Image (cartoon, rainbow, N blue to C red; front, side):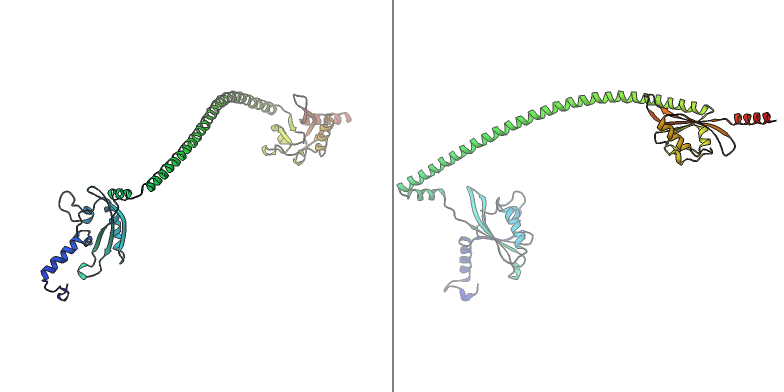
Length: 352
């Protein structure tokens, strides 16, 4: 402070002492922190807000801040360092000896003077609250009628709240009872469903065993059928007669190896129509005769030559199943070449 502002007759030391006294007694408590959070200057009484940490002396503000200030001020200091305007915190509650103290705190980044640039100033201001004794005094100052009225209103409000709570409790009990009954019903349904599932599982297991037995029987029958088919095929191939089996549509169902040499057949021809097959037989009406036999069930037998000079007796008969159902035709081809040659020789000898 410049000398021109000194009171008349006051010395510089007296002014400094007076300024310090005013700061200590009437100015709000405050501290100045460096960029590391260490306290570099203290003004006023800060004991309500700061206390030394146990152990080695530590002047770090975050270590000395009392409960209720440490967490909010840690965030506030970080925020204030990014802005030029002061940051105000209101209504912070600090644990002090004998109770709680409500405090307003201002945090501001210092831009000047140059010696304080980059530092942060924190100012504490206590918030006055009405204590219990003052409340009591104010209550005594009220008139008796006002107190009675207020007391009656409070009692009525309490009664109303109690009735409302009882009603809510009754409704809650009813809801809980209803929920309990629903849960019991659901539990019974689940138990019944579980029993049904258990029964179904046992039935499925029994059915599975029956199906396994049937499957084994079917497999045995299939093996027997395959063996019978093999026996039939070997029997048909062992005889000297060519045989061709046709279904109701005159499509190839089965044939012997000897038949495949007369009628051009291979394995892929199963299911092909008779009319699509080529043959060495000079028998253009073979398909019509087979169709006639299938319609009339009358046997047909003809002697037919081949392109290579052989003769065959071609017999067409209905295919009769074991259940007496006509299910196609059977064509047999018997080689009668030797017989024809013998007849030809006999005719020649008789003419001579």
